[in-house]
Amino acid sequence: MQANSDEMTITGLPPELLTSILFALDMTTLVRCRQTCRLLKEIIDEDVCLQYKIELAANGLENGTHNTLTVAERLRMLKMRTEAWDDLAWTAREEVPMLQGGVWELYGGVLGQAEGSRTLVFNQLPSNLRGIEGRQWRIEDVGVNIRDFGMDPAQDLLIIIENRVDGAGLSTCYVHLRSLATGRSHPSAQQPAVLSHSTPRGRFSYTIQVSKDYVAVLLTSGDQDRSELLIWNWKTGQRRLYITGSELSSFAFLTDQYILLTSLPTMELDDDNIFHGEDPRLFVIDLERMSNRHEIDFSDLDWLCAFHYPALGENFATISMSIRSDPAPNWAPKPEHKVPFHVARQDRLFVITLWVVQGNMHILPFISLVPSWTLLDCIRTLSPGETLRVFDWSDWGPRGSRLIPAPPTHTSVWVCYVYGLTFALSIRQGTQRGIVTFDFNQHAVRRAQAQEECEKAQMGSQAWATQQGTRRRVVQADDRVFHPNVFKEEVRTSLPYILRKAPPFAAEEGEGHFDAVMVSEDSLILVSSPSHIRKYRILTF
Image (cartoon, rainbow, N blue to C red; front, top):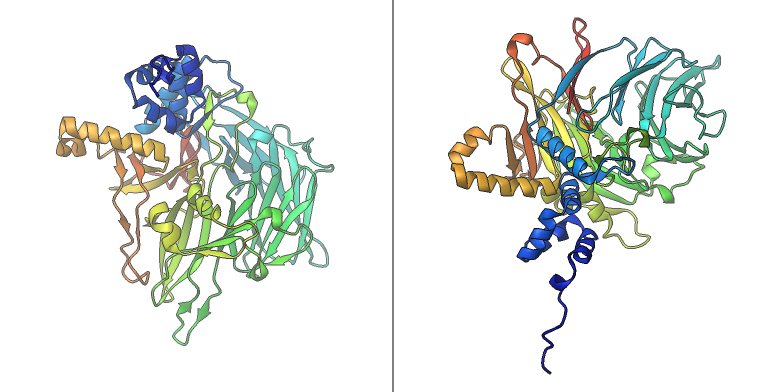
């Protein structure tokens, strides 16, 4: 049969219709279409909406739904933001005094501190590139003694932990649900907006996380070798989960449904006073399958799957693990900010710190950097109803993560060092400290790889390494964990990332003296905690 020469092809469609079709595609498909022919390349390059869509995805961002700026204005702001973060070139800085209340929180662009036992002070961190104005407000008296607190600015939610001990020695943890703006009972909570949980008397530390309708509190005993994880629906007051056990050390929301737990193995001392225990691992539990009424011992947990780390060598054991990730999955900023764009709600980086002991004295910390898709891709292979699946290190770790020795500057106190897919770390630079960031956004990695190859071709590899590579480079080579004999076999990891290094601080001003660096969506926060300094330096983008 003879072909009809008048048949319509996609490139023969009217430009307006073709643009609408292209706008329905995801970023990866758009880029592929752009490479197929000159017409599609011209349409995509000249359409501001398509360019904005590509730039959002390439930078791990989503469009803000409550902003009134034109797409062209948003695209301009987005490119300015990308350039500033790519060079770690902040546009402003300010100092916030560190108060004496003893507890603090950084979440959703708000820095909160206690002042005394009943007052809270909050700083909205500004953004020149997203149009957020900085401000400070106070809640003078919350009405109870503050043991700890958490917050979610997007939901105007303030969580205050109060601990009371009665005459019989029974300790009760009260979780007060307040408005972050006013300190009064949150109107969306079941009144009187207080959750409670009774525990044996003891000294507890608290870890608080919020994910949409869930508030999770981990109580860790400092003197009874016991941890308790409780999750409530904070709007209804219904308890959704209650896990106890000495093995439970840390947790994070992987999704709204899945909870990621770190497990401490039972440690035993041999006749030579050397620790022995099981190899480190992560557990995933399905919140929808958990009982909301009964206490569950960690050893009886019907977990969904486990992710094993490499087997430790002889004379090595894991003594502690922690996990950090911010913000919670599906988190988006409050509409009142009217931001043009924000960090995407899906992909997150989990920073897992493992403290490994050699014998009974030498502690070696490691940092495991794991993006959420590495874990979720494995979970998707489970059959319906399947539980207790074990993923060996070879199934997920070598190609889907990075495992690196932790430098001495890595902190276990100022732990807000991850946001979205970016991890910030302070490093030593002579007598001062500097800042590096690890960016695991794979779209940005591929773009940076192409840019590097182009620059090297123009400048020469040696000149590029001298001028550009010292400040920003794509790390593709395998990381080898180089402490001898820590693991039974050689451990290599290869997930690519962009390593960025901030310019040195002015030595004469003493700006390079700080304890730790934290990161938020629009800021790097330098922490100085010695008694003669005590301040936060907010480096604003």
